[in-house]
Length: 124
Image (cartoon, rainbow, N blue to C red; front, top):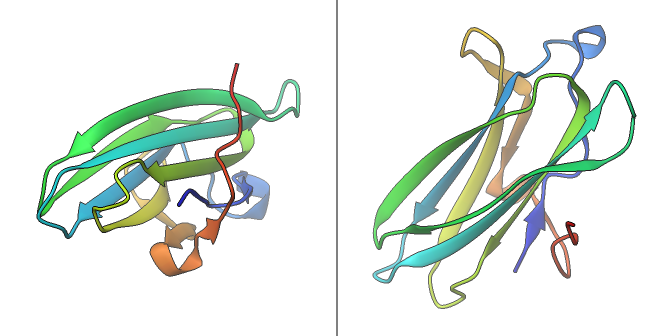
């Protein structure tokens, strides 16, 4: 089942702006999980939702994976994530981090706060 963070505003006017997004995945199952992550941004220059990253990777059984995505220069962003191995049980979380590597707590989204969606957004 795919999930989204929803649109997250990331400006200094509303707090601390994030320069990177951290996506954490914990595979709590005995089989490998294939994960698909899509990161969209809304650049200051266009104010249009734009795909920035589409990546898939395997998280081995009973392990975790943490990845960073650069999103500076965006007024907002959205992370969509999907477990392509439905037999594997995984837990997701995302955090915004500032230019010094500090977590932006207002941009923290835990598994219980993610919104399930019918499908990931198409990217071209």
